[in-house]
Amino acid sequence: VVVGSTYEKIKAMSDFRGERLMEAGPSMPVEVLGLSDVPGAGDLRRALLQTALAWHEPAANRAHFSELLRGLPEPADLVVLPEMFTTGFTMDVRGQAETMAGPTVAWMAGLARELNVTLCGSLIVEEAGRFHNRCVWMPPDGRLVHYDKRHLFRMAGEHEHFTAGDRREIVTLKGWRS
Image 1: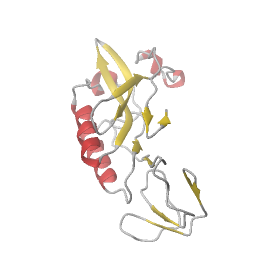
Image 2: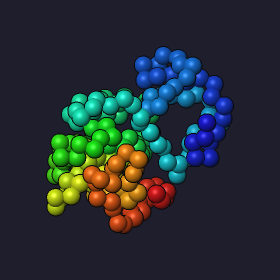
Image 3: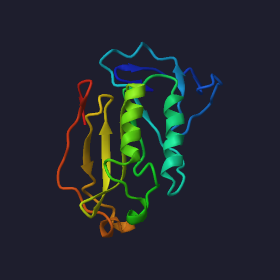
Image 4: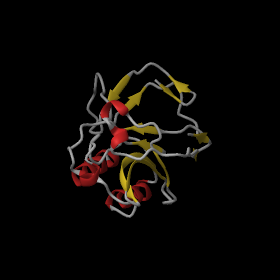
C-alpha cells in the first residue's frame, strides 16, 4: 500500500466496526495497519467509493453515500464518488436530470462542509434544455467547480442523450492538481 511517500505491506486491516478483514472490495472503508510511517501533512488522503447503486433512486443513493462517508474510519481530504452516483449509468436523461440548484448539489455542499472534505462525483444535469453528464468538485467552502464530460461513451449511446463538454477544468487540493 502506498499513501503519499508512506508505504508498507499490509499487516492488518479492519472495517469501520473494528472487525478484522482479509480482503476489501471497492468502496469499502477500511483501516490499514502496518504503514512504515504516518502519512505527511502534504499527503492527500483519498477515499474512492464504488458501490452498488439503487437504480434511478437519487434520494436512496444520497442516503447510502451519506452513511458510507460518515463511516469512514479515517478522515479524507478527497472522496471520489462513482459516475452518475445518484442514478446509475442511465440514458433516461429527461426522467433523472437535476439542475445545479437541485437536491444533489445541495447535498454535496452540506456534506462537504459537515465532514470538511472535498467531494467529487458526476450526475445528470439539465441546463438550457440540454443534458450533461456533469462532474461536480465540491470543496468544504462550497466554491464548486464543474465540467461536463467531453468524451461521451458511444457504445452506450451516451452521445445521443448528452451534450459533450467543451472545456477542461484544473483543480488543486493540498498542492495536488487534477
